[in-house]
Length: 295
Image (tube, rainbow, N blue to C red; front, side, top):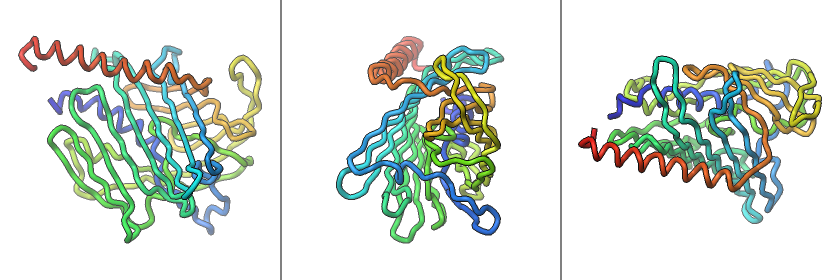
């Protein structure tokens, strides 16, 4: 059963590799610029923020949608960022069909320390439990546990990680106070690389990349021309408005190809419909499998 979904999990792994910005490691001597402030720094006490991103193939057909809800508690400085991403159904080249899946990520920041305190990741729609849980320890290390079906495993990141975390699908969220020529260093973690059957024995590997603000350009956003900063990093390019909103992102994803992520008006009703659609698809699939004898 697990091998049947290797291709799908590989796609999800690459999405996470592009999206989960885990370690903010600015090297003062090599990269003197500061990284833009994180959500934990930007939100005021009691403030909530809601963002929706439509996900499209470069050819224009829809792939899915992602919703992020951020909240800084009025007391205690705790910031929670919850992201729901729904993808599919998608038919890939070669005839493999990706069912509609839902990915949920919840990140808890201790704002005063500017670090991730807890991380929870779950994937629904594939018919087997897939999850990753992590928490900061008193030693400064970050301990994590993953599960796929009956398989489980643990790993520990060193005391330098994680310092910042993005959402599941978007390499960039808010990037205020940019200037042309700015650059900062990040390291990317791919959590699902340790969930797939080909588990590496070397521990969690962090991939360093450099993010650069390469220039400014005008794009059309919701029918209006908007001047934006162009931000390049890894396999992603983002177009960021003066106020820090990321209006457009372009990301290369294996199997799916070039994806375009567009900022959209937040729609809570669409989020609830998307959640229910995954549950309905999974229940229909379960009934089909039961009728076929569980295969």
